[in-house]
Length: 382
Image 1 (cartoon, rainbow, N blue to C red):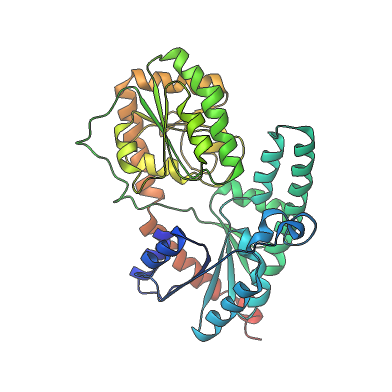
Image 2 (cartoon, rainbow, N blue to C red):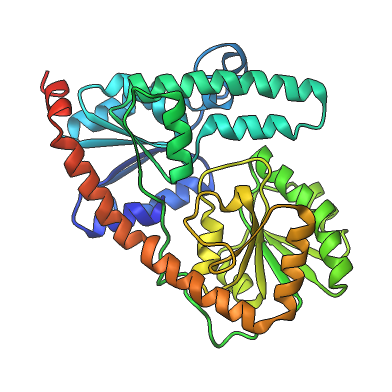
């Protein structure tokens, strides 16, 4: 969310951020403060497990409900004369109930119930699958209620998410505006020497579904790639892995895991191909957009690419099976001309449709149109 907030500030709007976090998040909040009128960082709940299993909010969402956050949001909204409250992700939707005097927009990063369903589908045991399926149904009911009762509008990040959310909440207003990236920061690096054997995957692996995707990629798909290209090398860049997980990954033939880094661009720039494989997840893959903005060819599977309005074969390669995924990677490693072709098209697509500067202006226009809606004017004039 750094770029949208920065751009809103640069456009002259007063932005007040209230967020959960600790450690590195607090330091990031200080950096964000350069573009905001105020930043407040609060700790998450430590007593959420029982409530998440049986109460509301359900599942891991319960970790993000605290009375301190509720009181802080109400105080900031009142004292700062807030016009619009954007509730970032379903984790924050419950606070809309306490902010009904204000225009409330839910900005989910994905259709949460879809993520839980997919996670249940790939569970390692029957018991875990049953538990996750049960929680997915609870999340779906809560998600529908949140969109219908807690907020005035839901702004999905992709057409796929908009359709999935509208299906479960037909009475809610659900619109779509993509998340974007800074296309001047993520840009081609023409002076960097590209390694023809190098493949890179970037991301954050703090969430269990992301770790599942990484496990499948390293243990099932990368060996297929190595069978086709024996000297292929995979570099994994991102935070959220334990020391034991890092050691296991580094013990895999041809795999290097560098963990968290301050800047992913050098790793993307040196690679010939960026890959993104998703079995459990949803939303829009920002890491794919970052690579495309740097004119790097991308291989993704269907789920990984579903949130991006790209044409397979023109802007990136989209595989339907693990075997096809490996074949696409091998083909790109062997074909510099195809890599350049996809890179150019991908960069053009991202600049045209996913520039965070352009999308920030569209977000402001959306807020303004929403605030002028006759129905909402009646609702919030009480």
